[in-house]
Length: 548
Image (tube, rainbow, N blue to C red; front, side):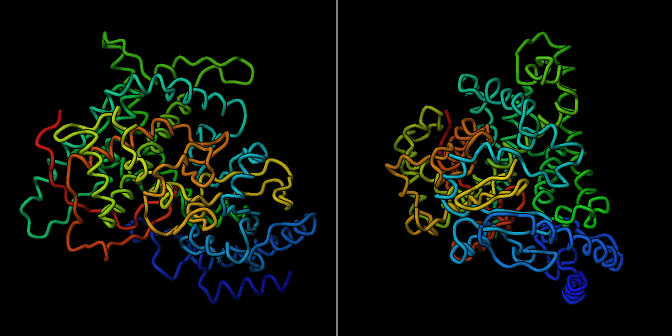
């Protein structure tokens, strides 16, 4: 034990507690968010040295009790394991380890055993033959803020309540019949977005140094209003809404916090201390977001009392839910209701806006692809006409652009981590119970065994291909696969095609400011979702005379 403590003390004193007091400016700080350490380093040092001594013994005993062959992986530090190996962009770092250690690697992150899947072959085996064994979620400490993990369809424990939530989404809200019935809502929301962008473009027209507009923000607001109409029969925001801007910033902070490494997750006895203050910040920001969602629900319920309009929406279905009285709740609590609504708003708006931003960025950097997709839109949709959902089936190159964007920029690079429900064998390796599992969709999209020229943006690779992203082709899994795959794929597919197609058909685009395709910043920032580190600022120029 003494050797472990000495090594720990050396690392802390020489490196300045790198996890808690990073030497480099973090991405969170670059975004203008608060730093993650509020406690005196000396206090943390004394406490962690004491706690880690016990941890060293715990890990040694645990490792000695593991039987069977573990997957290969990089050697780790005493006590810390591989925590220092991941860097600020772990999806990239782990992809580079594939050449040395193979398609499945093993990490020890403090006290947490972790397995990382890095290839199409391993993902196929995982989802086809081991999906049930790994059906649980790995819950981090900040996910427990406000009891969020208990009411979330993405995070709820695998069991009867999760099945209730999943059924409500897939059968009552996002079934194809209901999606078809709400096409007019999507059309209206897209038209609103185009109008907002036209207004914003008119403000910068004539400026000598046009910096462009923040495209993702407008798509984010469109997505919120679209989901608001499906769930609550109303628009939620407009670009000038103070509450809309606040909600957008709160969501960005939540995503950033959720993707920040938390030392308390790796050293369980530090949870009460919250050394980086992440749980406290998550409680604050998540509380704000839940309050906003709660206001929407309350306002909708008041409006229904006063209105003679009996139009039904998803909120009605949630309010009318009655469990079976056995393994299901009799009714959904206010907490469950608010978190459920908030989760759908966050998931749909964040993934849609980030994907559209990446797609437009790639097209502005690959002008040949931009010319091809705009030519297809002009041919299929026709000049001076709006893109309709009925056009989507004939927009093959647009579909290829979206698939290629998902391949290179999956919204959630590691998907949502799974957890082993019991000891198991996977691809010849022993995987202990409670092992955390990351499926690196970012690495799989760059798997050289599957993709030719994997680092290049080439939508043509999908022309004539049957590869899709609906969970059956494991080389392209931006929404995951198996029983815990994202439930919103069907709706998301229509929204993405309609939004991106409309932006490209309605406007000509160029990079803002002095940015060129050679100098544009293509770095990403990893939270729960993967956004551009520097938001895309682009200049729109109307190319339709009118919209029908």
